[in-house]
Image 1 (cartoon, rainbow, N blue to C red):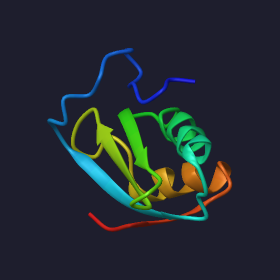
Image 2: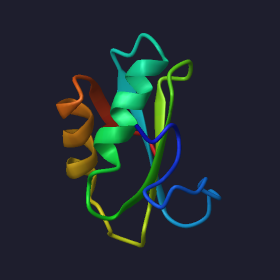
Image 3: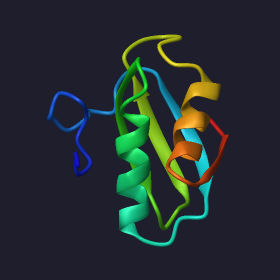
Image 4: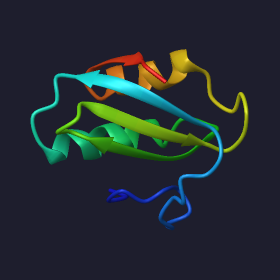
Length: 87
């Protein structure tokens, strides 16, 4: 598991393009880690940080159009949760 680190092993600075997902069905921090691991496997994703208490996942992309919304939602669904894009 990446433990809230991006693919490079470095903490994300928060710069660059990002997508915010509303995620439903999470119950604990392990849920967030499962989501982050699955989302970070999507090509074009630099890092993912899921906040279970807020029910949101912030996905930082490598560049504009790097990963489309359907791919990100699909990754969350593969982890066993429901997601919608909110920002």
